[in-house]
Amino acid sequence: MSRGIEMLLLLLIVALWLGRSGAYSVPKATVKVNSPKGFEVSIPDEPGITLFAFHGKVNAEMDDLSDQTWATDIVTSRNGRWTYHNRSHKLQQGDVLYYWTTARYHGVDYHNYNQRYVVGGGQGANTQRIDARGSGGGHQPIVVNGQPTINIYVA
Ligand SMILES: *[C@@H]1O[C@H](CO)[C@@H](O)[C@H](O)[C@H]1NC(C)=O
Image 1: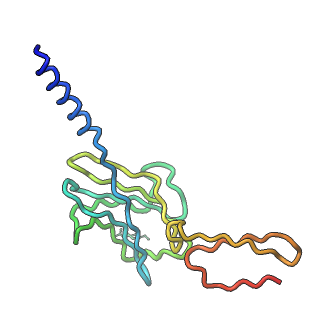
Image 2: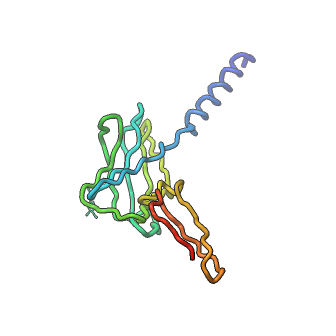
């Protein structure tokens, strides 16, 4: 075999390998809690996605992949998003939605396991910890999720 063909083959193998192991990962889902009830979990559409699946449970971690309250396959995208929409379930402030998602991308299923969303918690980004000092000198940690709208007076 000539050196040129050898190089070409090597490049081809590397290209195939890169293509297969693909840097693809399921886009991070957006969770939207509707009022007075209902919620949506969605990912943006992109060429190559033909299915989106949502698996979830509230306030308890899923022990295995079949342990869930919701397991739904979405087979069409709407308005540029793949959306699981539940119109009846009411999520309460402080509820934790444990979920995992699947995207079928060019015929291969990719999963995004161990996701969680805290209702009203801005996914944890907004959590504030206030260390108030009680009259006895002790510390009283108060954890506020979301936008704190409370006044705290410490005697
Ligand atoms: C919404 O959630 C409820 C459980 O709270 C379930 O019974 C219902 O099937 C869900 N709806 C959809 C569209 O998944």
